[in-house]
Image (tube, rainbow, N blue to C red; front, side, top):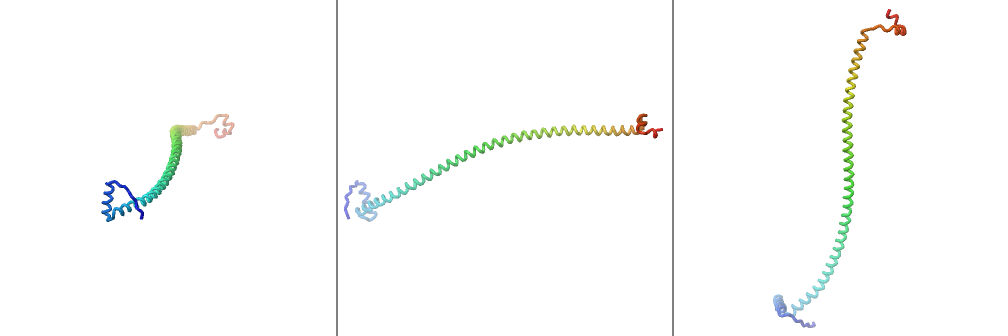
Length: 162
């Protein structure tokens, strides 16, 4: 096995000796294992870092796609809001027309009611006049006045009135 010379500060050497003693290893074995752990861990760390960067790139791509989808959905919402606003205006105009039509219907009902009352009054007057005409006809028939001379001759009634 090759040998390597390393220069350490006194404080690091003291800490390394303490850790070697706790692990029941010699200084040389402890330092060798520490270097080995660092080197293999460093490669492992580089691999993990590379994998993490790949994951990060993948996540960033997903985030960008989601942002695009969100923007697209926001635009669709704005379009739908415009449509709703337009339909709302149409509904309000229809309600105004309906209210005007309702007012016209109510006015027509009032006028119809007035005409019905006037018609009933006229019908009452006609009934009253018919009654009087009937009474007058009855009164005239009770009088039994002789028809005029010309009418008697014309109709040949002269025989009944002799």
